[in-house]
Image 1 (cartoon, rainbow, N blue to C red):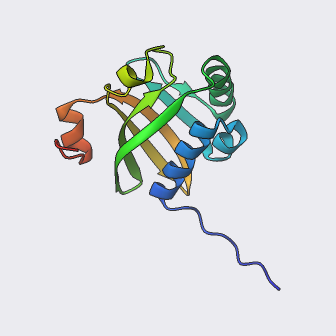
Image 2: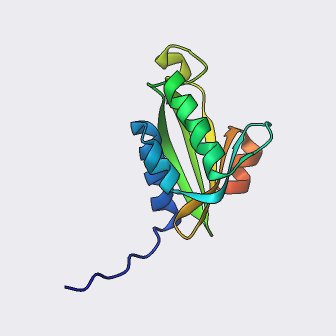
Length: 138
């Protein structure tokens, strides 16, 4: 039986897989979903660029916060950009889960050929919601 070459995952599927890897602490799975020049942008910090640098950063975060989970609530996708509105638990904020779940976060991913080239963590703001198409009531 001949194997059919697999097409790259659609952007939304790639991001859902990325979230799943984060929530399971699957570092190798995350790395497989990153482009070589992947950029991690957290709030206003300078970007961390490169799969190796991001692998090491995620390894450190998973080690320091093994209970970290992203709870997506709303996902939108347009032309290779996927935005996720949600909350977290078990993060560096070290808040009780019920308090941390009150803090909305937006993650914005750029996906190229089924892999993430950018993962941006941003504060939930009406301007950003409007820019990326997340409804104000989401």
